[in-house]
Length: 233
Image (cartoon, rainbow, N blue to C red; front, side, top):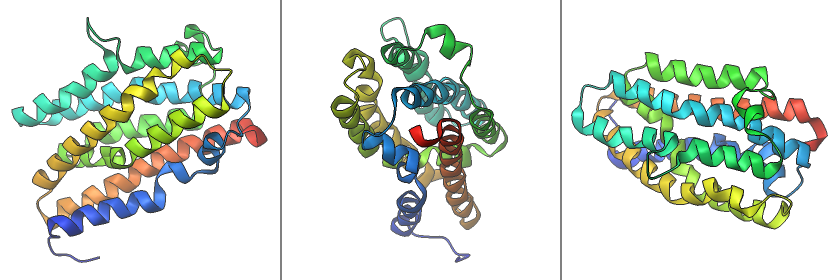
């Protein structure tokens, strides 16, 4: 790996290469989901375990905001917390995910009380939150750049659920519908901040490693879910 400062185009390409190689859309469990091969039990297991990640996203983002001394960045980044926690006018992503769980046959209490949470998922998500708290804020932001690959994933996931999992109430898929547009906005903002503030060779290399770490987090979550549901996932 070069020790010099990458130009903008090279830096972006190095980040995108990670997604092409390691993003969790390539995990066997995710492939099975998009091909309609998951059992209802496995779908519910994925939804229940993913909820732990969803409800920790604003905690992670609050950690980034608390470490960031730049008002302009904080003003941009705080929108992510509102997107998930909701406002008086918008229920937010966490509530939308709870409704997804209900549409799949899970009660809200099952999700909120982590009744189906796998230890490996808890460990991976907690590691991500701790990463955001302990790393320099530009590096924590760079770890979120899995969003570069999320818009296509969300569109594919929504189409798969509508086609293969008709037993799920379509109203429960609102989370996926809203994220198809939110993910594009979030990825554009995160990439712009990363390009501006990861402006030394060291920070650029750490940004790449942060994105690799985030891909590992998402992959490890699916490993744990796959282990729990076996041939059903």
